[in-house]
Image (cartoon, rainbow, N blue to C red; front, side, top):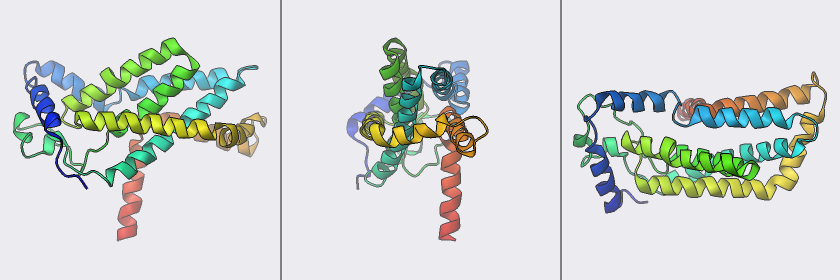
Length: 237
């Protein structure tokens, strides 16, 4: 298990942290935007919701099927990040002994024991790959958002290293690729639940599951993480 970030990561974050304090308004804006999902989640969730609603129209079943593939891909990507976190473990930049001093005294320290890999990057990379497969022009913007709206602000806030962002990209693409392989069977099987009329329990359950998934995309699966932590603490206790 690795415990020390690569030297280039340390150098890159150190130079990025030098920008802190030059514009307190900008710093506060980035913090609040990341905290409330403005830089990332809300935009991707909005696009997915529009695709899902369009897929409900006659003749648009392919859009609905691909949206379900994106859902499976994002969940698979999140699972891959959990596995990767057991292989590599090191503190995030804001909590690293050699980097913590570069941030203000009142800076909110990332309390995570390890920041590898970037789960946010993995999640939205899987979503961006799916959006690109549906609409290339919109997908290009989604991919640029992964770098500019998701990865860069979180590195600026001392939450991730550059290596973790690249690892998140690999996990995101890997998760989406796994979903594509299962699309012909698993996704097609799930799609039948949405062919039932409204009011049928399977249709209601399926629509509710998709709504909760889109909501978690907007919040970076924070509720899922919180529930997992509670269940883990109860299991240990």
